[in-house]
Amino acid sequence: EGGGDLPSQILHALDAAAPLLSTETFPASNFTDLKAALDRLSSRRMIEYETIQREEVHLEAEGELIAANGSHEARVFEALRAAVDGLTIQELEKTIGDKNISKLGQGKAFKDKWITKTKDGKLKAVPDSIHDAAREQLLSVKTTRAISDPKVLADLKKRKLVRVQKVVAFKIDKGPSFALEIPDEATDLTAEMLATGSWKTATFKPYNFEALGAEQRSGALHPLNKFYTSDPLIAGRPSDDRYWEDVKTIHQDGKYGSIGYRYPWSGDEALRLVLRTHTTSVSASMLHKLAASKGPDGRPPPARYFSIDRVFRNEAVDNTHLAEFHQVEGIIADYDLTLGGLMAFMDLFFGKMGITGLQYKPAYNPYTEPSMEIFSYHAGLGKIVEIGNSGMFRSEMLEAMGLPKDMRVYGWGLSLERPTMIRYGINNIRDLLGHRVDLSFVQKNPAVEEMTTSYC
Ligand code: PHE
Image 1 (cartoon, protein in one colour):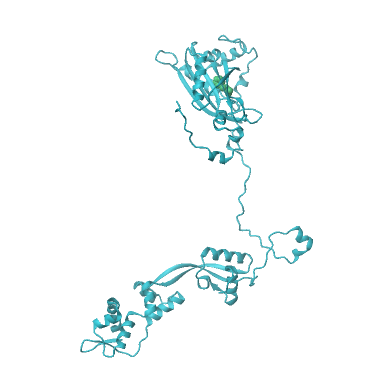
Image 2 (cartoon, rainbow, N blue to C red):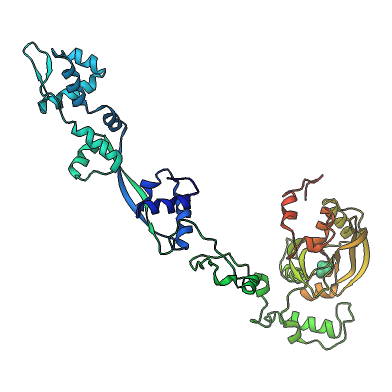
């Protein structure tokens, strides 16, 4: 035994007797602790060990009783041997104190001719002494944990005196570097060791080439970084030839009340695929579809479309600008709409998010006229920031699609991030979107914010 920690206990035990079986020498040790100690020693080649699965025989409760007090038949014999005149069955039961043991014991004792019945009906012991083989068998199981004769084992199992248990044990032996003390092992060769020459006598911890090692964090491409398209390089041409020609005419010469840009328009250039800078391309495509649909009066019906999606811009990144963000876009198409209606809608829309006091600034968009940029005060930044852009789509755009002259279309494109910054008091957009986002920021914000009014 000896004191000390488990590794040194193992070394001392091996010094006394090797090889050894862990279940015998360290029956109380926990498997994990023992394995860790063995691995520590075997990595230094101080020990060698192998894991073995063994079957052990253990005594059941009844087996323990027999090992302690003797077999039933031996107890019957001893009780009768002590009574010179023999005992009646009732007296025997009383002496043993257990009717069942007395009954079972008599059967076996009669068979073995340890006891006999006298003419007056009493029970008497026959020999002077007996050999309690059953008890000895069980006592030997207690120390060897084994029964070599399979017939005996089967019999004892059947009588529920023993059970067979699978145990994992370690067979431990001395290794080539066996010693009673674990030497200090250097893990690294240091400059100091080289300078002093102490490396010559130092014991180095051997490399463990089996170890899995620490998980490596390596650079990887975000899926969004892989989607640049080289194939296809260009978009397909719209099937509607009249539309295609109209777009060309509007740009070069003007049409539907517009004087145009008056420059040569290139179809090839127009078909080039780029990462979209706004979701208005989606709105335009929906409006083109709307132009082809017919309501009850045979004209395109009033319609509303909304989208939220990622957009990409060639921006110098700062506190309020990112090269990519989410755009919340919407369009409302109806007959005889006015600009005041668009402003009222914006006030309502942002008001639902708790953003009030909007300011509008005239702006230019090639596809809307009039156009308005929408601003709101950001308390954290202490200034007014742009939160969206809006306008009424130009007639030269809508009419080229085939929409009726008196149909008006509101359009707006809002950043998802800017109003969120105002709502949550975030001063830097990079704290909200992108690789610098602090996960604790995400965790600390409630999943759902309760609003004073419900969303429409
Ligand atoms: N496309 C504009 C932008 O990205 C938003 C907008 C959409 C403006 C629709 C007017 C109409 O800022």
